[in-house]
Length: 122
Image (cartoon, rainbow, N blue to C red; front, side, top):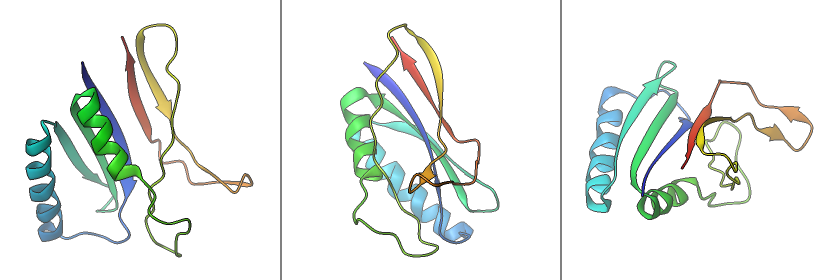
């Protein structure tokens, strides 16, 4: 089954054209090896990445789980971190937008960047 996953992440600092090209080269090689296609957009003056992965459900899930796995239980000031979570799909087939706005320690909302995933239930 073909699935499409969209996510956003923030860079710790502005990236120059050479750094973005290196990310693209590595992503293209890995995606081709794993049978995944997609798109990578760099927005917000080099700070915000929006990526789309498309391919078989297992391949996309494996790839995203590698990307999203948080390697440590802490994050330093100004560092970029990844978090993994699961959602349960609605019972009714359709296309849904899952808006993401993290809550810090249950006390303070992070800035809302309008980030969302498009989830298609078939």
